[in-house]
Image (cartoon, rainbow, N blue to C red; front, side, top):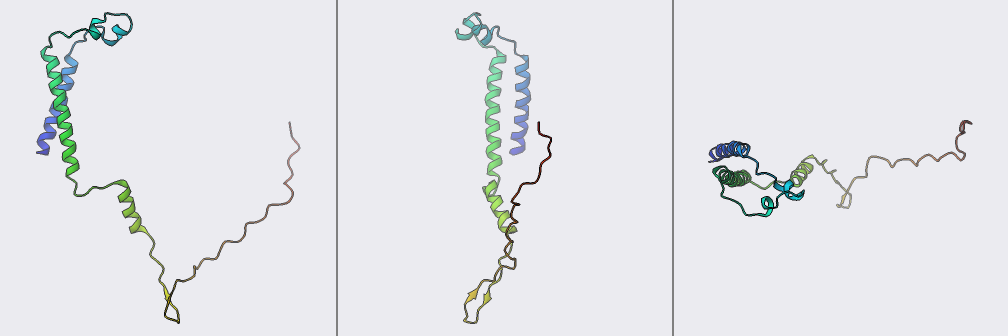
Length: 138
C-alpha cells in the first residue's frame, strides 16, 4: 500500500506543478487592489471557474490527503515511540562508568573506598605588585 500511495503522491505533485504553470494570471490581483486598481478583482464576485482552476483544487486536495496518509503510515510503522531525549538517556546509561566496588569492614558493614585521587593543591597566589609596563603610553 505504501509504494502505491507514494507513486500516487509523486504523480499528483507533478500534475499539480504542471497545472499551476499552465494557469494564466487573473490580472491586477492583490497589487491592483492595493495600488488603486480595480477593486472588483480583489473583492468582487468570481466568474465561472474553468477546468484548470478545478483541476488545481482537486489536485491540491489530493496532495494534502496523500501527504497526510504517507506521514501517518510512516509514523505508525515504528515499533515504539522514540525521542531524542530517550535515545540520549539510553546512550548515557550504556556509556556510564561502572560503579566502584565496595569493601567489607571488619564489623561486617560495607564501606565505599576512598577516592584514589588527591585533592588539587591550592592555587598559586598572585604577585603583590603588578608587572612593569612599557613606558609608551599615548
